Image (tube, rainbow, N blue to C red; front, side, top):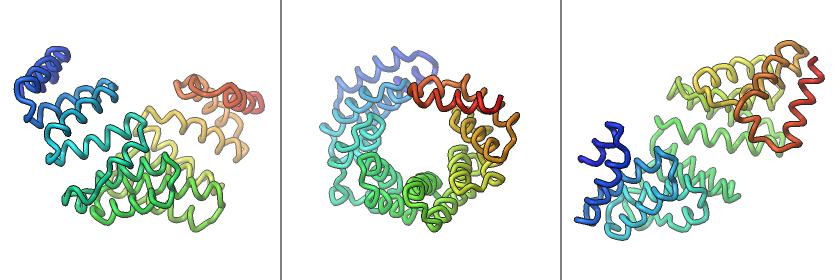
Amino acid sequence: MEGLALWKAGKVKEGIDRLREVITANPKVSTAYLNLATIFKTQGRSEDALSVLKMGLGELPEIYDLYVQYIVALYDAGRFEEAIRAFHPESYPQVASDPIIWNSVGLSRWRSGDVVKARADFEKSIAIDKAYAVPHNNLGALLLFQFRTTNDAALYRSAAGHYERAIALDPMYGAAYHGLGVAHFQAKDYDRAIPNLKKGRELDGGLDEALYFLGLAYFAKGDRPEALRFFTEYKNSPDYARLSAPEKARVDDYIAKCK
């Protein structure tokens, strides 16, 4: 489609305008809505992407791709309750064999506080496609969250197992290495935490939190120079800038102790 080609060529405004022209001329072209939403997502314009998909779904309620992307866009926009309310698995036969939509709904349920149903959704996603790494990572994160509040070793082992499965399916999955490292850290297994945290950070340079956990792990091992190195690097990261004043003070306190 011409609009998408213009965007890929770096002509973003022209691509957006062309896709809008297509929608105005023929509101029944589903790919125009999907492509325009894709452009908005890449620009971080989640509300615009959501608006386009909602419009498309209104014109073409039978198009499953529009429905799935609408659910995903609701989650991306932080509208978790709306995503849950919009999820009607009985309305589309494709839902029964689609791991992506179950994973997305699971994320919305978790962010809405329904851990039990979120876990069931992630497990459903995994059951549909055992080679899909993402729900393994998300289920690992959910189980780790439960482990932190219960200290139930079985939850730690299960969380670690799902992170390991995600890594086996996708060896370049930085978030899964990071999650596994955090899981081992929470279990006070610092020697296993450190290499996984480093690998996660290596694969995904945006995982600034790994620097903080590496500082904590080395601090717990008594290696103050290495702890100081990672805490200092974390302090210079974008993640530190987003912390609250008490959280920044905690990091600064660790740096002072290391010195």
